[in-house]
Image 1 (tube, chains in turn orange, brown):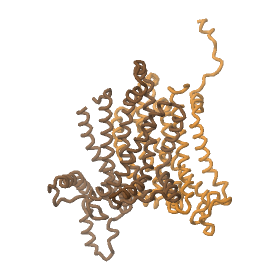
Image 2 (tube, chains in turn green, purple):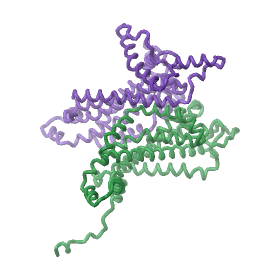
Image 3 (cartoon, helix red, strand yellow):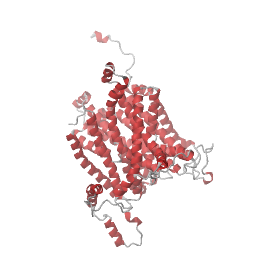
Image 4 (cartoon, chains in turn cyan, yellow):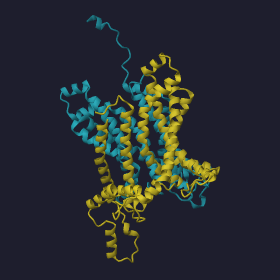
Length: 304
Length: 335
């Protein structure tokens, strides 16, 4: 007994798990740069319009097709609209679509994954549904969905909100499957652990069990899917806009700006460059962020 | 293994039926009217007759059943007739396009070579680029080659094909004028000059897709090699005095290829889907372009058939990947 008391008392408080994750994350230089770049892009796109005097939809036909100058750092388009303002407005839409669609896909994926992993009765049914969704040709179906539901949603919510809801929902319900599979696998493994048995023995209900014990433990794969989901959603939205089936022309997104610039590619090649670079840089930074998070959240790698 | 294959084949049938039902029900909601282009001078009763001739008057389940019969029963018969000169399909109604009033499958067969040339070539090229890069960057992990290789593959994987395609057009067609920006599908290879022209017009679309595929596959190849390089059997192989070349290229590579081969098989249908965008960029009139024009023209039988063909590709290649995995890795046994 005295022996135990005489043991040296740890001087520092125990390190929290998040501290460890942050330390590991910091060592991944690509991820750190990716995170900073992504934050900068989001800030520029959402705060920039407050500081920039031009309106993205203001038409000044006399100063159309201008080359970059101090007044218009990225030039103006064929209707004299300021390209920098349009890039920022487009970025707002692209990033919001990316984040909202990712949240929807994540919610669906985690819900289905947790239900399938936790309740044995639902497992077979839900996983067969997931397999079915994985066997659907997604890009053709997205094109068909956008075409079919654009008119009714435009009529119900107005052209901008309507197409936003449509694209977010379409991307969300076609990209939850990988998350569901990963989460189900992790939940299946968690369910056999002792702490779940202990929680059950003191009478924890299923709902409390999932929210208190299961979900916090599957947070790391969900967070990694989240970053990859943003990248995927931004690319899909730009691809739809690029095929002319996304947002209307007076409501710019990066993909739409690229699509519009292709017509003027011969005379003004730089107009293709800006939106393309913005999409690529955002996706690249998010992918690096995801890579770093995956390493940081994996306890087997941590500390190496 | 055989029972597994048969069971998967049997299971694929309801999957495919369900997918075709989903696509069909989605298309039933289409707001457009295929009769919208018919002149107003045509009397309404004639229009009604025309609608019935298109099969639109029938209830939904009859229309669906007819499509299933046409696709799974009549079309294979047409194929057999075409191959062996028999006359099984004579007088039977095929899936007709509303745009051209000709059988959908005939148009698909016309468009297929363009897509296959560009997509197939780019996938093969992508794999050929990816494998050596993946192998070498795993073998020299954290070397300069590996750092550059992983960065380039990350960039290639993040930059969408519609941007790389447009960028290549701006650089090589607009500024340098080396390659044509539009793919001429009527071009026929007859002599050396026309072959060179074909090569020049293929180079850009193929490179765009090949780089995108190579980026994805080389990441898998590198990860899979890294998993195997630290295994005990590699140490044993080195300890018994095998040359470094044999160890890496025979022992490690063969084991690392198992997951990579399945990833390559799984990627084939995705490449067909992704080619829709590349075909649009370079104006290749292949399957993807056919799908987009059909969607814009409200040509429902065409959209239904094409989407289903894409789904069929996914199911078939999933099956191939599963079977390949079992054959290549004797440790995997599907009971």
